[in-house]
Image (cartoon, rainbow, N blue to C red):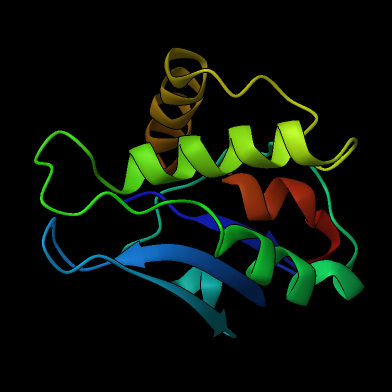
Length: 131
């Protein structure tokens, strides 16, 4: 499962994601206070930066990204990639890294391997003093 996450610390995050299946996809914002303890979290890839004051703006902006229901080849990864491209085109400086599918997947595979071998994942590297 892929989501866009605005990390505030190792444990505090806002997650922007699609939930459901191809016929029920729903865009949601969820505030998480135990992010690094999530049993589903396997790492991430930093694509940019926003200020904490931009979380509401990001939520509203990502609501504009189309959701393609009833399409078996379209999923949460597709939505994340569409959302990142939308942000890239919409405003300068939010998305600052390569957002190609193959590039992100390679980084996510590396991150999964770090998680699997007990190495630091993205939130630990971004907020090392909290480890």
